[in-house]
Length: 432
Image (tube, rainbow, N blue to C red; front, side, top):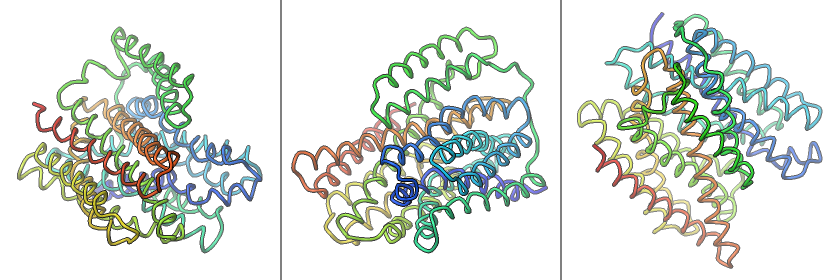
């Protein structure tokens, strides 16, 4: 069993999960036409997967720690594969929604285990580079999955979108069975923490997606309940007292970086379609330079951190991302080349900033709780993504609704992202 094969196995499994987050976005008109569904229903088909995934990450991360990371990974891959087969064959909206919920359960089982296997298996001298590869797939895999999905929709049918995750699951199952070691932690399962964390995350993510104040109230109340319960529990799901120093810094960096990346990507895609008049497939191709450089830079970041330090590498990545956003906001016209330099800088910068943040989070919890640590990393990503899409999307919509052009709204959103990165840079530089 080689660690290189272990890394490939967990990254293939991760790619299956990540590609399913963005894949259906390109098929919205096809779903509406196929089922006669409203736009609200179509969005639920897309978002219920993310909502289920985010809500169950912490509990199922703990399940992996307790019951064994390899068997839980294999079980999650099985559930995820079956769910995607059902989705591809769904005869109705109801069946498709149920399949997407089941896929979210499988994804929440898979995602934290993939990172936990790396942090609990790789020796310290190799762990940083492996985490860099994992964060590259996590960061750029969504855009790559979106491209492959757009290609499948263009040349075949929306139902073929589910072939990609099924193929990835099949490959991951074979590799994981032979090359992923098992490890576990014998500790009581914190049922109260699992329930309150799920309700908190689901409520808050629902609020960010739908703007529903009931979701905010339920999520906030459950979050308070979770903290109180964890402080009193002898064997907590997540010891909230560890939210200091490196864990706090890593969480904030990941929250903002993924938020800005998701927010900018979500406004770049309609920019290519609305302003440049490109098709969905060409628009996704236009995003690939940013995704590819993000993945390359993530793989290179740990080596750079060994030479100049983790904080310097993260700060350089944040600064470069901010410069990229400034370039896009300043130079944008109705020409792709006007935004390409900023996309390149942003892709490299995001890639440099993510691995250090992920390692800071996972190294703050002991080896036997790496499933929970990995789940915390993933929940932070999901919150950042939802926040960024909600914030920067609202900035664009507000500008357009007040009579401005889409380009003006897009420029304002990009300047907002640059300001957020400037604040984050100051936070990281001043943090001890």
